[in-house]
Image (cartoon, rainbow, N blue to C red; front, side, top):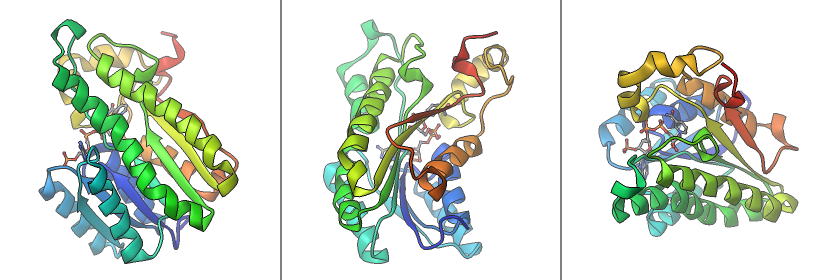
Length: 250
Ligand code: NAP
């Protein structure tokens, strides 16, 4: 129970990697609120599952791209539980296509959700963390920020932006006892990667030295390290969790 007495918000917590993070933090004793966008069935099922296990959880419908929704979500947690110790900015989307075919909407939606969403939730949470003179922020990047694939210019730009934002925030709030780090997953088995997996799973595995796709739990364990007492002196870092995908070997 490494997070006993802590409170947390995880964005995009209803499915995939976010869901594994919610389950992990709750299992370690934190009260966990999570934001989701539209799939309320998945969100409610997760709350029911956690409550059955005696864990405290809260599902909040909030589009991360909407600044006032982010403010409301953070205020709700602080009102309900008195404080916010941990923020995990995990919500993210892809709208893959080559630049020549990319609509402005496809560009904007990815930047608004993946990058502006991180800004919105960090800004909403920072005041409460500054007053407490402690806090943990973890932002979800991707190996796509530096390991390029055609058709992901919007996504790669959003994730590169997250890494720069993370480093800058780390310097701004280190003196206040707030750490800000990022996790960069490789190829993880979630709905986001379903279409690519169906088309080329064996091919993808050949590029991963561990010869397996990552599971959402692999990422949740890295997040747990970054929000726990074990990482007190770690800030401004990007922790890559990819089974060796970006090492460049065969
Ligand atoms: P996923 O299975 O598609 O789940 C996405 C989650 O984000 C869902 O809970 C979804 O809520 C939520 N979400 C989407 N748009 C949102 C918005 N505007 N506001 C609030 N919530 C929103 O994705 P995933 O694979 O778990 O990915 C999670 C994060 O890891 C993303 O940032 C992604 O870029 C990153 N990542 C994933 C991989 C991978 O291989 N899967 C690799 C590198 C990085 P609803 O269910 O309500 O739509």
